Image 1 (cartoon, rainbow, N blue to C red):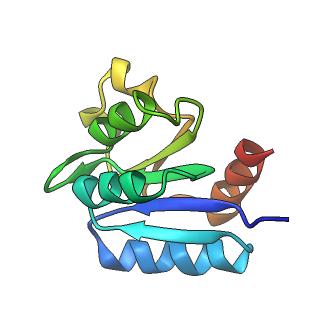
Image 2: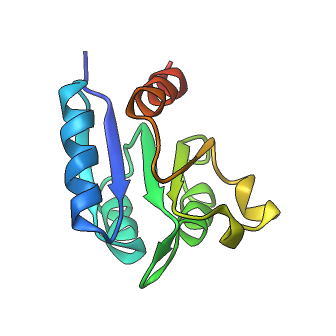
Length: 120
């Protein structure tokens, strides 16, 4: 059985490391990207991801920009989770791009539960 592959995108190295530790402990294979451009390069290299988890506000674009690019490509059905510090910046139209939105700080158990549900 192949490991579940998750693309984790955030420009905050501490958040990336925390999420990597949590998700690897659950047995997931994690690929990280430090922004929208890095994430899109990962998708060009290998788009075989089961789930994408992204921050909203990054220096080179937003999580909505990333989601739009991913969903317009070969992986139209991939689940995308948004993690953001404030929901005020996310438009109603952008909210529809995401399978789930988490506001920082969030419950790790709820976060892991949503991921498990989306992957089943």
